[in-house]
Amino acid sequence: MNAVIKIETDLGPFDLLQTLKATESEMGRLKTFRWGPRTIDLDLLFFDEMKIETEGLHVPHPLLHRRQFVLIPLVEIEPCLIHPILKRSVRELLEELREDQGVEKLDLP
Image (tube, rainbow, N blue to C red; front, side, top):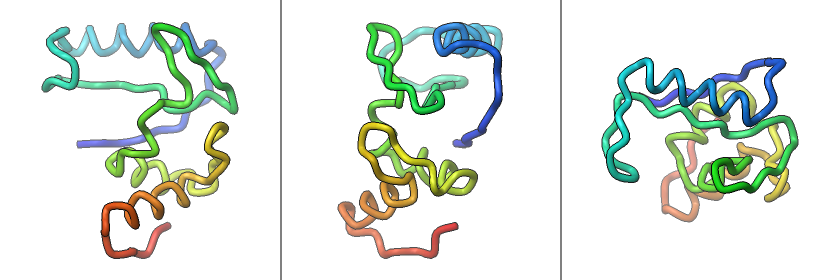
């Protein structure tokens, strides 16, 4: 199951990431191999219009524009959100991804 939520927080991006990782741990996520099965996987997709590239955090999430399973729920809650690096809305990114994959264009929110 995949979902996207939008939150307001007083935490900065690094503190929020620590909170997400602590939540994963509390819910039983074990470190295995990269992209292996997991109990829960919480990602920080965007943080305002920030661009962050450190060893432990990349914002916006570097692969979100290639992941239909992320873009679909994101478009449902914030279709006009502009990707600060790609300079296109998440709706446009989803439409482009579907065209690239040869998926028939569907009505989007």
